[in-house]
Length: 132
Image 1 (cartoon, rainbow, N blue to C red):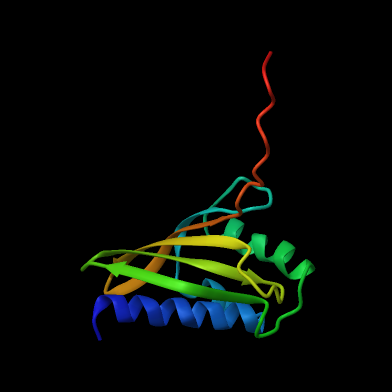
Image 2: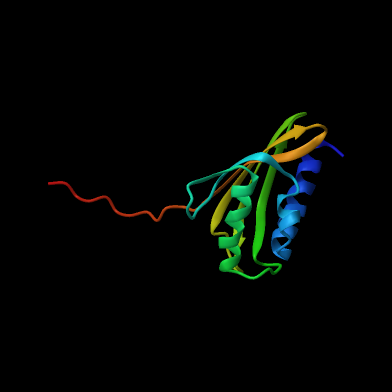
């Protein structure tokens, strides 16, 4: 299996763990030094224990289900030691994507690890105020 296929498989396993509410599966392929930027507070989470706590809030708003967290338009670029992936997220049964996802991975001791995770939501566009 090539690197992009390995990373894609890892991400799809992570997605299924989220859908199942399987915390051990969710963190299984994350680095101890994970950095995550999320939509709700906190602005950033540093380390695996802080990352784990962010899922408490996520599951407070939705029960495990196949449509709880769905990655669409997944794109993976992978080299020998570094990879990144991006996609769009449908969350909580939404019919269309509501968030963006970017993942950074490193191959450590022969195994891919998610070391950077970034979720973002688009800002609503507002009309600029007229200046007089």
